[in-house]
Length: 541
Image (cartoon, rainbow, N blue to C red; front, side, top):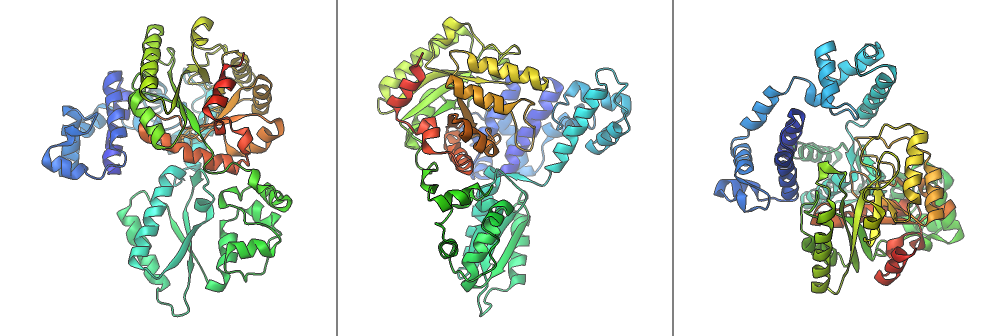
């Protein structure tokens, strides 16, 4: 029921634009989180049991029932009427808030992103109060970024969709031999299409036109499906074509762009080149081919080597689950430890914890630890890095935590030099153990902020701070493309889910995929260590 979730998010966004009550807005956000993965919404609407779902109150139940049973939403229609035309579309552009967007609507008559781009190219924003040349250039840059990513999809959305396609086509054509390939098989963080390699039988039992018809029907049933591309080959050449269609250009060129296509399996294909098999998610930069030649691929982080995670939020700030529920979710994943880190007090938008609330949470952690002795619960905080690089709370408060994640959540537009110094100062803080989502990027939504990131990597190594590989599928920040620089400076990383609900703990798998793409070794990832080893690392002076 993705459409029901989208409805709640759209209502939430419109309420934000109108400046409505923060807690009311948050209720819609939490309700949308509770609907993730549910398939029983229509039945519940018919039986009037939607309110049995946690986070669904009377008002939201009425909105969902109307939408599910009648296919419309009077609340959404009224909100759209109350918001100036174009405001919702314009505020999709990073950095363009409601106030500035309203100025563009009222002063220039700009109501679409296309009109905004045209106005920037015509220099119409330069003379507007609150804008100017630099602001215009930044808006135009953000418009280009937004437009370039239309029609793309994050891995977390494409992965289950591809699995669904595979299951349905195999159910329709059981004799069909096919495999995922391309960007999907390499687990690229943003995909432009889904690719599959099909073995074309000599008997031609499944015709190409029948498969194309099936694809058309699948995409109609699944509104958000990316384009689906099929490649065809014979069974005798399957290994060659699976390797060729999976490979990035850099990987294929490093292999020497082999021409011989006689290989029934990928193992046979790589063996013919004198190499061991290279896992698909590694096949990006070409550097992995050299690792295979040297026989050092086994050093790369295994899929099953994460022993615990940090960066998990609870109901005390902007999470959707209790501390106990998050601990239970970590146990379900087989983890030995979990680090709880709600937002600090400056994050008012996320109900950041005031100092008195901290001591109450510490007591709760101690109680939960006694109840679940089989898992270590570390008590921490995600502390905002303030404009001057200092951390939220005074030192006497920070030293009470088991760990501190230092993160930027505001003032993204600082210039490169100032932003770099801001982050470096936070790294030098003696209580910082992790640098959270280090570039601030949001996939398909916001570029990372400007900073000298290699300087950040060097400083983190010097001060023993782990640069987080944030596994939230909307971030996947640290970008795996920094892997070579991270390895050069031997800077530690930590694969953290940034979980805001129990399902978010499992997002760790996306971070593992990115860490493998970065060619990180097990020893470079701090949370491959045991609870005792990690505790010792956290407690160092």
